[in-house]
Image (tube, rainbow, N blue to C red):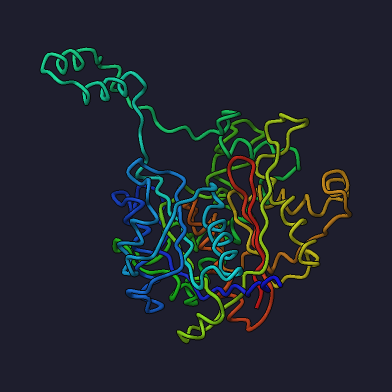
Length: 428
């Protein structure tokens, strides 16, 4: 007889404040930041020297030295050194994917407790120097005589020392995520003002949440920074309207630095467990992770008409709702990652579109959501978006929101580079 899957409890999360790139964490590495987040979680839940079932975490922007990042950060966290850990990467969906993978192991009874996390630095980025210098350095390392070394060094020219900054474009299109989102905004007829209105709400909700103390037990000081430094409590539609467009400088452009998530440094993690493990340590359950789903779209047009690069959640959520036997309106909170305000609005409009849902999803329209229930404590436009950390931030945030309500159901939707989407349902 097959084992009945166990419920997967979310016990809480911890993160460091998110910082705009090249500000508070300009000198911090991925390992520094993720270790700090892990340490905060260990202290928060009294996990010192605790042997966890597994730790899974990742980063999108990584140096080669970070090849075993999750394990190194685990060893520096205060957890028992016999705790296994591994890296994974699914762009902006990294830490939600980590939580999903670990949840499956907990549900299957393979492990009892786990930590999912993510980190990214847009300040400490790896630079490459081209194949010629790479070959010269490797040849120099193999050289046996002074003459061989001197000859190798002499073959290097000044132009070979020019670094090549990392590409911000999709490898198959050469377009940045913002440029792809501009295409989506035009296709779905998403205007500048409605993007600015969503961005304004994100900042005001985040500022109120900080003022009300919501983040007090979720965010822990690092490098003398105590709060997310991108939140603008005093912003207004008038201020946002003065910003120049960022990805399409023509009159047709609508995306700006104000209605897009900023380049951000930061780390976040979340503690998952079986109900039995939580009870044995007297840790209250905040919520349960009940369903997850992933999707990918053909944003290149390799197999037919191309899709908007950030539209995958529009496909993942309906599939997940069908498995859960729920409607889009059956949620008390919607945590939708704001890579760009336009991306959120395109996704919502797709779910409301009878034409899109019939042609793309082979179903009737999902309908509209109550916008008052969306991102009630702000999201990535205001709080920041360290790529791999965003999923863990959202899971921890939504779990606490549900715990404060005492009951309810929440939806998570995250778009990711490469035309992917990761989604989840949390319940209490």
